[in-house]
Length: 140
Length: 121
Length: 304
Image 1 (cartoon, chains in turn blue, red, green):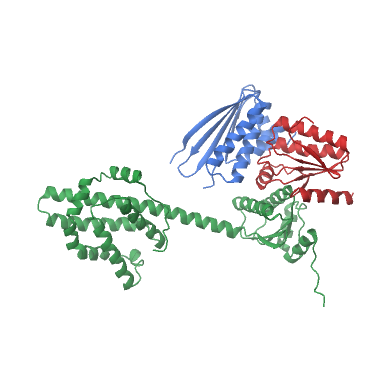
Image 2 (tube, one colour; image 1 turned 45 degrees about the vertical axis):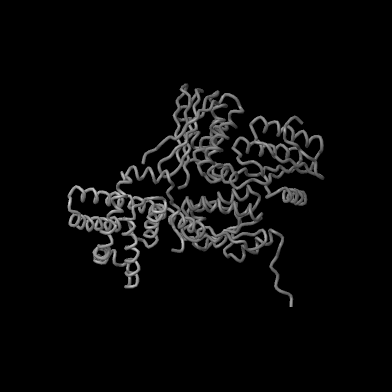
């Protein structure tokens, strides 16, 4: 059975308070879809890291929160978009390899976030903004 | 003392329970409040209780760890207590083990830890 | 039947929508009720012919180990057969049919066997209906009604089979999880996790989560992880253990690693894995002693 999007909400990230709103939205959806407490904390924390990246490094943008089903499991997909400076391929590689030194919180933010979710994709280029998509599924 | 998180003097130590969701700016105000309280009271130890927090991202974790390091520069030992299992698992999965930060299961044991740290100094 | 393995149930709305899709109308039910005398006449020969199929194949014969079982299921089968000609298809009827699938799941009879058995049923009924109902139009209509209800029954049996099967799977997984992470309280504030078997990353995550939950629940100061029963300790396993140790430390507790065999000690050093974050002991007994000393207790010989 294919992937179905049951519901989608787009949240703006323009003020610092929006980071907490994105976090709460992720938590509420994960809990209502039966994520256990560890998976909920992982998704919520990943959302927090990425929302902060949008606000701090991307100069604001948005987060889309989607309620997914693949027929067996429930999932939450989040898409973080900013129109900030973006990253070169080399920068991205360094950021994904982890380490603090590169872009301060951005480094650990991306590499750490990747380890909290089931699917992770980044689309970025210098001057072209950054899009990060993460998905987390219920365990079964 | 501008922030929403109260910092109490209990015996020789400062005790603070973070009872609100930590946004970035609340976290920063909290750090300033704690350092000013140390300056004012000359407390020997600091217990930060985070048992209410359902998530701690790397930014907040760093503010908490830095607060402890800053307190140490002022001669005050600190202990982070009550971290939830989900928070610990998430931070470790992200590769953020908060090395060098003293921890304890709850406030009582945090205070006991401070006492033993003082003895071993 | 002691318990129903299936939680699957049908409400009025589901019943109606399913009946609509199978085009099972009140006319069909009336037609079936009118066939009741026919059904009673053929109850025995249809039941016997039905079991000829089931007992004639090795794969299905094993479900009927002795004569007593055969007599019992034949009696049930007669009830089932007559039920088709009661002229009703309400919630009680659906609930009864749901039990068929759950019962088959319980004895491990796969759907292919009972779908095949249903086929024989229809064949037996078809022959007799056309023999006895003179008017071919009427006979066709009567047979169609039987076919609709049998298909309807099959759909319920399949749904409850699948549901019961999922629950069996879930129970097995929970049991495996429980067995694979048995955290034991050996003393006030001291927990022990004897790890047995291979540690892959999925299991490592479970281990970490269970350990953290139990430490918080029990307010335990120390957890001893004994790896004597882990066949292979490579860098990946060592890494998982170190992560668990780091998370345990964040809670304010400590980890002790025991059961380090000579082979494991060699591997760890040869691989260059730094496990200095965990105190280690070869023997579990030494680990327990160390744990007790951490919580301020000692093991002393009994004074005589």
